[in-house]
Length: 125
Image (cartoon, rainbow, N blue to C red; front, side):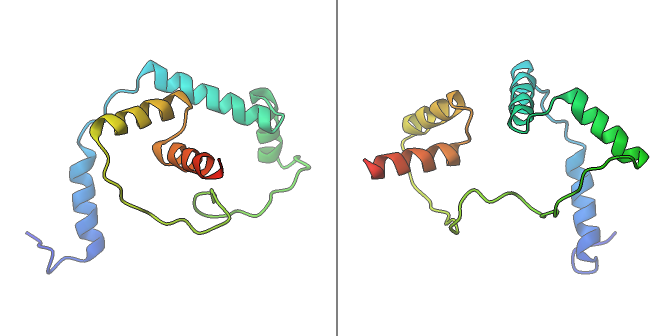
């Protein structure tokens, strides 16, 4: 049996990854699928396209008849700010955290985005 002292890091990771991969993921809720569809629709409307147009463009690209161009590919997540972001740690009462999460969920934002926006508005007032 290999141990971490005699095993390359990649093999060790691979072993641990397989062990965790067997844990079943929770089933997706119907609401999650609805939110994903809404986001897809919002993205399509932002770029003034629909699924039929995207399928047509994909078919043209795959057959070599597409006349469009591909822009630069940027690895990683898109930047959410022009400035560097800093992580902070704050202790909050559980009830306040639940309120924050509920308000963020209503606005379809994650906790971090909700707090960034809320703090920015509070400091500008």
